[in-house]
Image 1 (cartoon, rainbow, N blue to C red):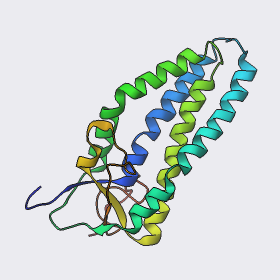
Image 2 (spheres, one colour; image 1 turned 135 degrees about the vertical axis):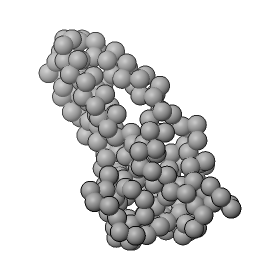
Image 3 (cartoon, rainbow, N blue to C red; image 1 turned 90 degrees about the vertical axis):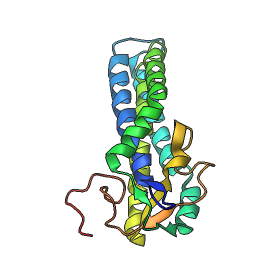
Length: 194
């Protein structure tokens, strides 16, 4: 960064970064959890897990939407000296900062299988699905507004903040072709023409 520029990470990429790890850890935990009959039995465990999956996906997908909308509405245009962080770097940083939480969540989901088989894993998978849904919602907003949303990297440091957390004061925006991620945080299928 030079001359007062800020490092910026895509909001949708940060949201989406946790989706795949939570989904796959949840799927593995649920699959392994089915091997144990548990206290409730497999049938009740799977039914409880399905309910938890739907509930978790809805809560995560709908959580803090008002805050996202408020920050997006007040987004300032990114300056020419701002540095746009690559999608892969943003995702890697998020996963590095949250690796211990992911491991603890996976172990908790495995441990819960002795009481309610598969339910903990399905809860984790539901959180991952909710993050994908939230990233897709952000992508639709970005397409509609023809502007990508970015957050300062220093507000996300240490893994304690997320893109709508208290430390985040404002978003920046760029044109729809900026960066290497499509609206919603997915990998661009074709290079953007700038």
